[in-house]
Length: 116
Length: 114
Image (cartoon, rainbow over all chains, first blue to last red; front, side, top):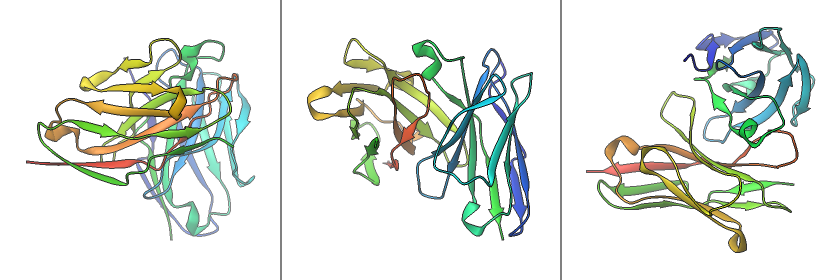
């Protein structure tokens, strides 16, 4: 049973550049959430996608955008990178909303983004 | 706004000793509650969850947690710690309103001494 996968593992970008991170959900899951984990902090919710639409968004600027594809995989895009965007970006998948089981989120290993 | 407090940044426990990690939350209603573990360079692994019912929940790897409504707490326990338990532990809450947004605490780093 394939778990949540993310690519790439590591990424180094320069300020002002744009980056795309990718996520494939756990088999059977159709909802994808993205989190940012700064060094020494707990993950912070960026947004969630279900049925190819953004369902909920955390307190992140519009520079952060996403997409979900028909196969439920997802991308996180960050434009105009800032030094403060350096973090571990985690993708989590879950079942479609409607049952308590949908609150169980399964995380991928993350993408470590370094902005120089 | 919801918040989760993990008052202990670091905890050191001797191998074989018992463990309790503290978690307090602030929310108007009882949210859904979770504990996750993160090993260095890894993603988060779900240890256990509480939705309703029995306030003592069992999880993987011998962990358990007790929900205490009166104290707004959801502390994680293990009777006997193994060296492989050394990791970062995060408590998280989710409002039971239909959106699965998780709010995390800042984590507690567990060190296990021989």
